Every structure is written in C-alpha cells, then in structure tokens.
Image (cartoon, rainbow, N blue to C red; front, side):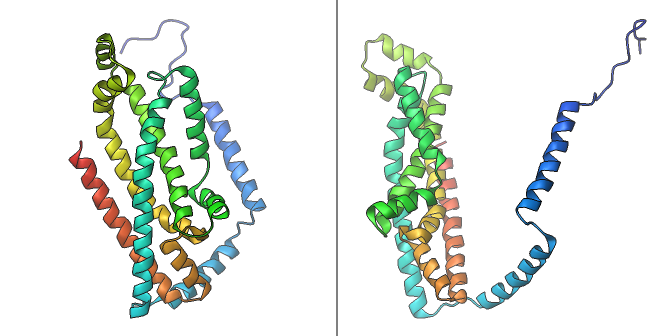
Length: 266
C-alpha cells in the first residue's frame, strides 16, 4: 500500500453524511410530535386488539346460507361487470390521451394540456370520485363505472405517455420521411413499440379495478361493496366474512388472469 502524500489527510471509507443524519433526526422528532397530536397511544392499541378479537369471533363461521349466497353472487357479478366495462372503456380512452401527453410526439401545448388532465385524474382517489359521481348520477353501477374509468385514465395514460417518450424515434422518423400522415405514423411506428407494454398495463389495471369495484360500491357505486355495506349495517358479520372471502378469491383469480395476459403478449 503506497503512503499518502505529505500533508494530505487520510481518506475515510464511509464519511459521515451530516445533512442526512440531521434529516433523520428531524423526521424522528416529527413522527413523535405527530403521534401525540393524533392520539396514538399504546392503551388505544391494546383496546383495539381486544375489540378486534371480539369482532373476528362474531365473524366465524362464515354464512353460506342459500339466500345469502344468492345476494353474494348478484353483487359479485355486478362488481365484475363494473370492473370489466370500466377497464375496457378506460383502455380505449387512455391510449389517445397518453399519445397526446407524449412530449416527443405531440406539440408542446397539447402535451402539457393532456398531462395536466392526467394529473387531475391521478390526484383523486377512486372513492372520492365515486362519491362525486353518486351525487351527479345517483346510486348504482353507473357511478362506479365512471369512477373506475377516471382511475384507469389516470394510470394508463401516464404509463402510455412515458412508454412513448422512452421508445426509439428512428422508426417514427423513417415513416415520417415517406410523407405519411400522423395516423399512419402512430399505427406503423408508435403502436408496435408501445402495445406490448400497454397490454401489461391494461392487465394490471383490470386487476386494480377488480379490487376498487368493491371500494366504490361501499359509497354507493354498486356491486359487492353495496352488499358488504348493507351487511355491516345489519351487524351480519358472518355474512361479512363470506363477502370478504369471495372478494379475496376474485382478486386472486384476477391476478392469475392478468399475469397470464402479461406473459402472452410479452
């Protein structure tokens, strides 16, 4: 090992990062302060565990009575329909919106306008959007479908725009050099590069909409969420467990289907 030049201080393998340490201290102090403001106490946690144990005890065994299963099937079928319809419409609307938001393809004013619209869609949770649509169009599946379409647009359009911006521009320039119109450029050079990833995004969004269809139903968007909310109001906790198990099963099936779709089109 060669000696260090005269007067040069020895190098430290892991020099202390004082700004990062100070930031961690500030973060810990803030968490402690916020915990006191939010009344996060150990006693409340222990009482909550006891109450949760009693609640779980009332949920077992799950209720599979014939009339309850009929309600479950009706609600679950409606949730599946809400999720599929919202995903399909969201796919068809998000593709042009995502292309318009791509800064390497669309004019700057159009791209920034589309990105601002996508940001609005992404800033609101599906439950909040569902509440707004319930107030606008009333209770039922239409409100849930519209809420999930907005959620799909916020997710899929952003990913489409990012995929277009990351693609190779050489095929685009080659097609443009032939004098083709914009639609031909998109069809011949953009979509072949984007579609495989877009199908994977769409499969994930279908999986997400299957979960969110239960959430929007709780606030009046139809589907199994409405059935779940009614069971809670009636203190019918064994039926609540049946609904929760059915939702878990559907989400797991949706995960398998979305994974199969991603593998098929890779």
